[in-house]
Image 1 (cartoon, helix red, strand yellow):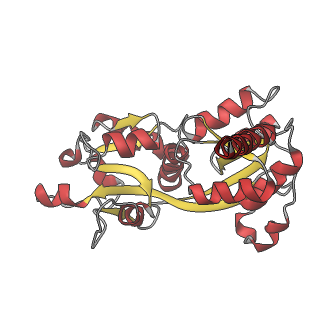
Image 2 (cartoon, one colour):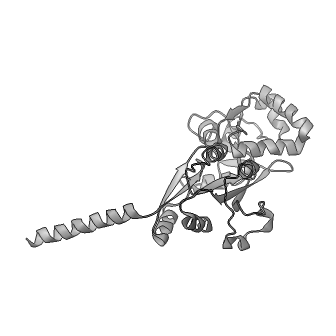
Image 3 (spheres, one colour):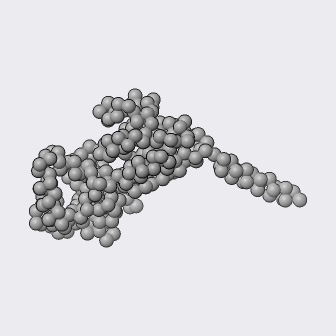
Length: 282
């Protein structure tokens, strides 16, 4: 009988916890496929505010922004993370974000604050540039590219993968870097030559880096558009300890584009207070 009472109390506690979890408010964060955050941070936010945090990934940054715009009359989430300065004007013109002057703005450099109305708040930045697989070039006894012009040379034919600028934020950033280097009249000629040299245009960063790049299983392209921080990330996230990065970034004048990433509260959110708390936590 005592055992039955203990089991009943234990079962009642489990059911009560389940009901409490079901009754918790849900706040949804819409973002791109490359978004990553530790389980500990998610659980800390949920515990601190007594909520369930749902992460909704909707493709590369450009696709995610388009999805948020298309669903603005019935928003899919409360907060959007991952609009960058290349897609910023598209998002702001669509009018999908609410103004929110977070108290955390005082800690952010003025150079990163690109929206004076505070509809989009900067959360991080990175430099988009070419990366290459060091071992591939060592094995082939070839010099890695040092300039954009190198990509047009016959010896680099079929070696480069970039992202579609219509759907990918690093793809659009790379396109803008070529406009910055060659000007509005010259960049198209560069791209014509790059296309003639068999550049591969991927749908997004994940497919390019984890699918087409030679660092990925089955990848055939040793040059990829990624970030200046990608070599460090290779070391940090490696399953096995590495003494040095297996990749390198190609850096130099007019070789990189500073990408700033933003977070914003979507108009029509049903959880405005929690949405603000989530933005403050980013």
